[in-house]
Length: 248
Image 1 (cartoon, rainbow, N blue to C red):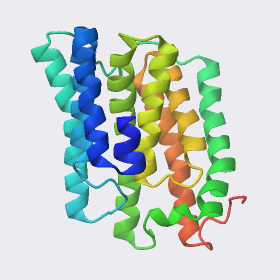
Image 2: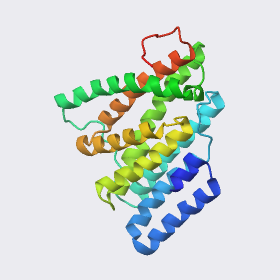
Image 3: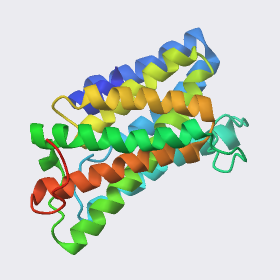
Image 4: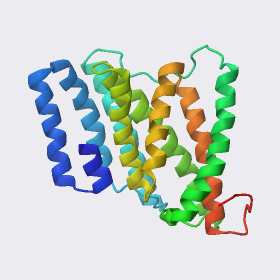
């Protein structure tokens, strides 16, 4: 609920109060849960300290990039060197080959992005939450920003939040909880209107996929493929004569 209020609603005072109460309540019920909720809360506090939008100015990109980096780094450092545990991991080289079903799923992600994203972004007008990339500098920064945030989503919401919550709740419940925060964050980034009907299932699928594959590389691949389609749709939405390949 604090994630919804901080990012989805923008009510920081109530959001911060609920965030503090969640950790405090856990202190009296489950100390282990309190320790891990404190890590998630630290990340949320850091993220909420900066404006979350698609402003591509150098100052904002540095500010937001620094905050997102700290939101992942601080929980990992505290967990590893203060708690002396190895719960938060970022499994890149798992040594496991992707089965055919995993490869076909990647193709399915492309198809879903192609069919859904133009209808959503252009039909609702929310593409205007991202800048026009007709200038070369903005084009490059938009591509970088979309992909960087996509990678960060998996580092924080899946490898950190979902992983920590799984230590204390059933996988299905931990997945729902991370998806609520995940989709709230994406709302503030720009996925508004009926965006949660798209982002919430996506967050659930990413959590479930990570549970099955145990691979950061794979869930990042899924996300970046989807985001590449997103980038192409955004470019087209602002300049309809560019990439006239979409249906909407």
